[in-house]
Length: 322
Image 1 (cartoon, rainbow, N blue to C red):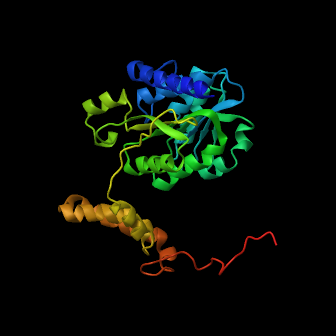
Image 2: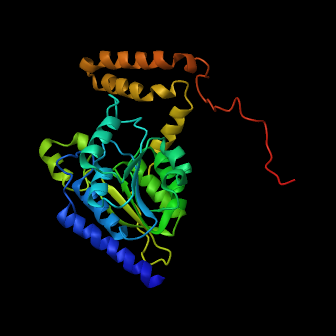
Image 3: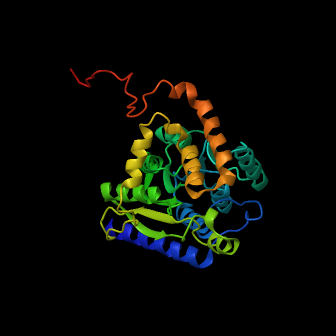
């Protein structure tokens, strides 16, 4: 078993090096697809899936389909291999058009092996057997909501469905909350190891055109790549994380506040006020008031602070065999 797992990890590293050097393994769908993943990431997903293309009862799975770049790039490269994507298109889709784009691109590429699971990721992972049957997930891309809890729950709920040699690619690892969740998962599940991480200097939204073009050829917004290492072949390697816990404490302070749902608009308004940006201040104030109007009935039922959301919880319960 030791030699088997060691040889597989070496194959994974070889595939990472090849993706770093050459990008896409198969570019047959590149004239149809675009999206928010770097070329090296897509190329690596294709190569990793290739390691399992002849392994029965396995599949590719991703959380966060967006407009289909990664799902359909993998499915097109291996048209006989089952590929599944989970997304309910609740974020990054202001015009509600992404589902239609994915369906149109799937038809255009005739990617019949690409199956969309149109559900919230927690519901989908909680009953994943309903969709993938007895298959085990060989390549698992996590690229959905990037808050700490969502990232960690993807890892935890996905575990029981993983093949013994599964490879996990966590996208957008530039984000501190993403790296922290990976760090915490690895510390609490030592049978998994990080075999590679790569980052860019900033989010693509903050890059100039020349810098963006450069990093679109690479890992774009960062990746963490995990493998199962039951024999402890690899030393511990963890994603870099911030030592300060201020942001996590702030998250708790916001969550308990009466106006918690208004935090994004409130912070944007605070930015305009503090920077003296009078051009945007009026619009952001209006955005805040509109958000308040949308939540006002619910917010009126809360305390000014220290909301625990415990009013309807049972006083006590037992879970006993007696």
